Image 1 (cartoon, one colour):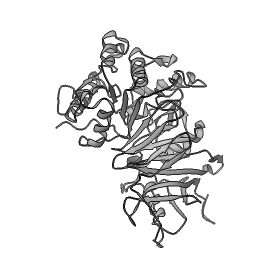
Image 2 (tube, rainbow, N blue to C red):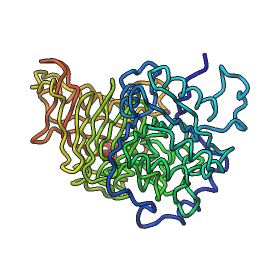
Image 3 (cartoon, rainbow, N blue to C red):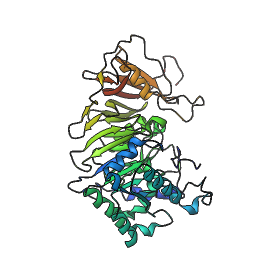
Image 4 (cartoon, rainbow, N blue to C red):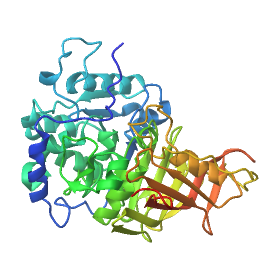
Length: 438
């Protein structure tokens, strides 16, 4: 059986270094394409790694697209085209836009959609983004799914150059969303829903150490972003994905602070953030799936750079799980009704972890500790815990604190914490021990 067309940890576009100057020079003061005044449609944004048997998420997309009458248009332009896939002729090994489109179309029909079709746009078929035939195909659909890969390929294929204006196909999808369609995406397909300053790559440690830069870089550890952003379907925050797999809270906090955003939705794998009334000031969000979505709140955060390095204090971290809801306008999180408030009974110390962002350089391959440290703190009486980066020179310490108003919630009475609301986060460069060499 052909492997799932999921994204690699690092993806590099051919000639990507040349994209940097264009991205920097094209940066506007605001998003080029204004959001529609009202969007009765919805978004289903998955943090990557969507499993074939996730009936909960596939079913939600299909339900919102019309149930048994759903017609799903599959867009996989974030994948390499057939011309760049050495296994294009092998149906069991191929991983290009056409075979990935067929793969997802088959999955949607298997999960109950009346029809699912690949929308034939990719780097080999950029002209199709303005084709009468493809626009007509889009207009027959009731929902859309954007697959994973590299979000910059969506920028290249569906937006028009330096103008960053909609192609005819993207304009048709935007109009369908405004009239009630569902737009879903996984990994790069979720990232592309972002507005200005969409992340284009990077790792947490390098981001904390070096900061962010506008552009798309061959060095996949370098924290980059696209100033004009993606499609701008989501209004209320930045988006990051694969958070649980790759420990991306660090890069998300640094990018948000550098680009003056107050909120980030950090999505975990095989789990969806469902957004009603997208593009409005009244976006209503909920979590669907086995993992969770972190919401990073930087309204009170203070970042600074000194000779020792970059730091941030007073950011807030909430971690929402299946059934939890969030209102963007009021910045309010609501645990699912069946969850129980947790009163921490444990007096043992939170275990120390020295790889808070799951470093690719760590030969032990230990799971990263940001979420696990946060949950361990929530389960204990102590009010503060720390974890450090695997890398040193400088290293960074993450401090998690339970302020007044913090709450934790469990799926069962007396169970382990699942949902966390309002944990305080600080990140600072490690201070050398007294007497240690500088």
